[in-house]
Image 1 (tube, rainbow, N blue to C red):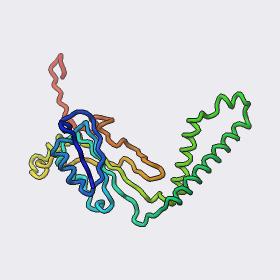
Image 2 (cartoon, rainbow, N blue to C red):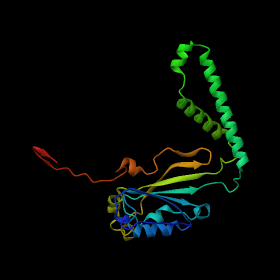
Image 3 (cartoon, one colour):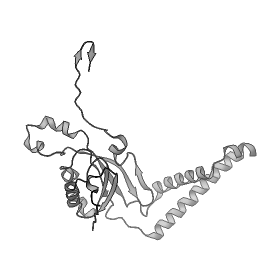
Length: 231
């Protein structure tokens, strides 16, 4: 079940808003939100596509009527059908990961401590925050390599690159099918994934146009040479 509430006047507001939608009717919600002009450069949308709808998921058709500048991403449930796990199994894995990371940290510290003086040790030893970050990194390494309980639970994140598509469509002016479809050529890229134990891991920002603005935009450049001026 999905629920969307928008305050009066919010559709035209330039105040940034974030929307997370979990619904099997996400295609209808995209259409309704577009009619309310809720897709623009200030808003960010994430739609969770459940596994039963995944086989029919087509982001191009869902977003073909959106304007440039829309910030939209899809979380796709790519969990294997055979995936199974339990809370006890997860607790066991996390406990082993914690113990392993602590043991690794102690061994590393002992190897250094035995080679230097107490004064040097106090100067170079980890702070509490640094030690916490290092141990967390070790735990993640352990879970990536040995996790069996929830490693199969997996959500893939795709996001849209939307700027510059109107310029690209100019070359198709003779093709009525493409000309009448505003954003048939939205480009979707894989930005990362989410798992229960490792959390959200990305190799790219979820909304590139929020961070990089006109990234991937296509523009025609015209120069005029009229000495001594060049424009």
